[in-house]
Image 1: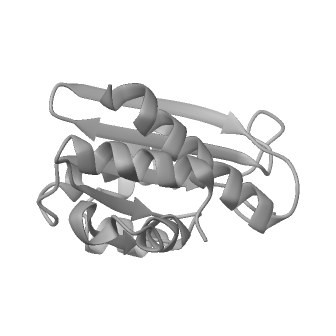
Image 2: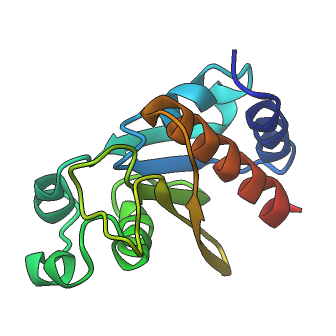
Amino acid sequence: MPSLLVIESSKLLKSHHLTIAFAESATAGRLSAEFALDENSGKILIGGLVCYDACVKEEILGIPVPFIEKYTPESAEVTKELAERLKKFMKSDIQVAVTGLTAPGGSETPQKPVGTMFIHLVMKDKSVGIREEFGGSPESIIMQTVDKVAELLIMHIV
């Protein structure tokens, strides 16, 4: 069962006749899966693209290698690009992209520790990016990110 925030944001999307699509790196499809569990999913969810490895960001979504090398695959800049480029593949009213570090082995640094997640939401006249730091296990970090996306949707739809 999805969280109360996912349920609330899904209802809000449906009541405003809005659709959503996801480009997911660190969340690896969990965001799409959680929204798919809501009873409104058939009305709001267009789909999701898992772009866990940088090669998918480069080869499918067309983000230039030098851009990813400059900012790292887990960055605000790459996350924004993912959200903006997703529009070309999935015709939805809202595009959401997520990158980040749920476990060691990525581009973590003291300034960008494990638990750092980047979320970018694009809709009509809005482009909103945030950086959050979550704690706990990889699953906990992912679920906190799912709820943060839902919270962002609630804030920006109304």
